[in-house]
Length: 400
Image (cartoon, rainbow, N blue to C red; front, side, top):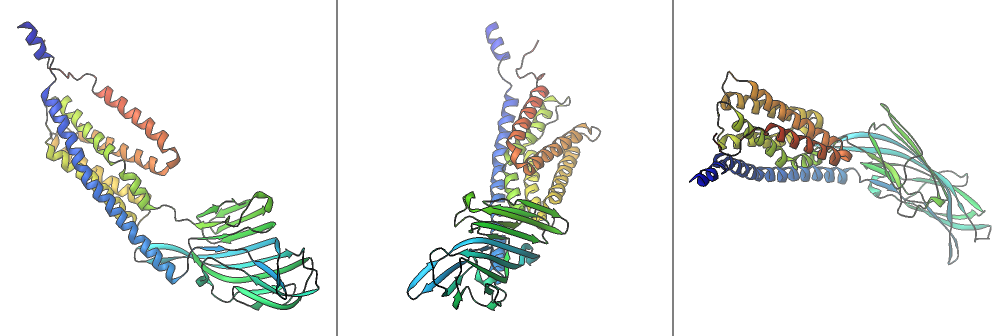
C-alpha cells in the first residue's frame, strides 16, 4: 500500500503535460497561416517581377558593353587584330520609374570608348576595315553610335561599320561614343591587354559587381565614381565583366521571407512564456487554448503588416510599425483578458519579452552574415532563462 502511494505521488501532473501538448498543437495549427503568408509573399514578389519586365520591355534591359573587334580585309583574307589599350568612360544619369506601387531604377549612360588595336600580321599599307561592337540590349541605343579610326571625323554607324582603304600601321587607334539606356546595372567586358574603366553617376547606393572590384571608388550624397585598371595578365576571359548595380537598399520580400522562417520559434517562445505564467501564478489563472490561438494569429498578422507596409515605406520603418502594433495588441489583450486588471506585471513582462524577440529578429535580418552566430547565442540565452524561470516548479504531485 505504501509503495502504491509513492508511485502515485511521483506520477507527472497530467494537467501540466496535457496543457503542454495542447499548446504545442496550437503552434502546429498556426503554421498553416504562416504557409499561406509565404505564398502571399511569393505572389507579391511575382507581381513585382512582372512590373520589372514591363519596364524592361518599354525601356531597356541590364546592359553589358561587349569588346570591340577590328578586322582588316585583303580580298578574301581577313586578319583579326588584338585589342591593346581599352579605355571606357561611362557617365550615368539615373532615375526611378514606377509601375503601380513598384519602383525600378533606370539610367541613361553616355559611353565613350577609345583605344588601339595591335597589327602583327598584316603588312600592306592600306586595307578595308570592319569594326564591330555591341551591347546586351540594342533597344537601349538612344541614337546611332558614332565611330572613328585614327583622327578622322566621327561617323554614325550601327553595331558594325566598314571603312575603305584605311592606312595600316602597327597600332590602329579608334574611338566610339553613344548614348545608352538600361535598368538596374551596367557592366563592361575588360577584353584588352590594358583596360582602364571609369564609371560615375548620380546614384547614391551603388553595388559594384562582376569579377573585378574597382581600384578606386568614392560614394557621397551626389553620387559615385569608380575606376578599374585591369591588365590581361589578371586572367580576365571573354565572359568576365565589371560594373555597377543600382542597388535599392532593401528587398522587402526577401527580408519578409527570411523573417517568416522564424515564425515557429517566435510562436513557441511566446506561448511558452504564457505557459510558465500559468503554472507559476499564485491565483492559478488559466489561459484557454482559444486565447493562445488568438494571440498566435496576432503574431501571424505581423508578417502581413510587414509586407504590406514595406511596399510603401522603407523596410526598417515598416518593421517598427508592424512590431509595435503586434506588441501593443498582445499586451492589451493579456491585460484585459488573461490577468486581473489590478495585476499589470505580467502584461508588461510579456510585452517586453515579445518586443525583445522582435528586436532580436531584426538584428538577425540586418546582420545576415552574423545571423548564425547571433542566432545560436540568442537561443542559448533563451534556453538558460527558461531553465532559470522553471527551476522551482514542482513537476510531480508530491505531498509532504
